[in-house]
Length: 202
Image (cartoon, rainbow, N blue to C red; front, top):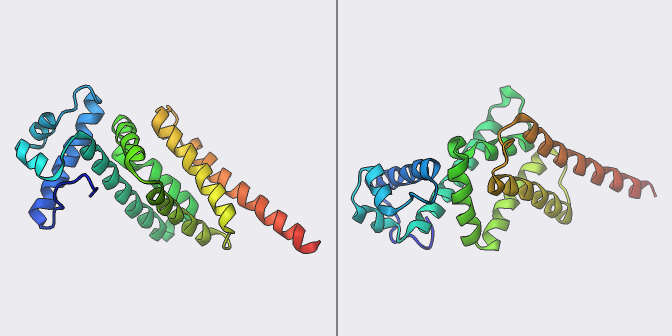
């Protein structure tokens, strides 16, 4: 939950209520966009009182931010699931990209709105920690890379994904987009390795 959340749900019933509220938030954002998005509409859609909304979320932005946080956590879980499915032969870097693209259950409109709020509200340090997780995935695929190379690559891939989400590109779920991001990662790392090998020989 975020700093804007009034109360953190600790009991199972409270957690279930929050899950229902966030699912209603996603459905409304996808269907109506921001124009029809109100806390009253969320309460009606979720089948809870308006008081239940304000018990955990002080405003609409907090709802959208929490939705993005939830999907980010689910993205991490999906990435681990893909990595553990060894029979598929899916490489770790591709698993990470595929899990990110598949987040929000394909709800592109809800994702664009919620992630826009998330990027506005999330401190740069928190975003950096998330991108560091990508470096760990890359290190499962390749030999450990230098911090500067990890920084350049993770920010390049994140920038492409972020722009694709916020701009609402129509190829976001196309296989070729996933392939291009994986190609970007591997081509850059291959160039880094080749440069390092050349320096070693010199």
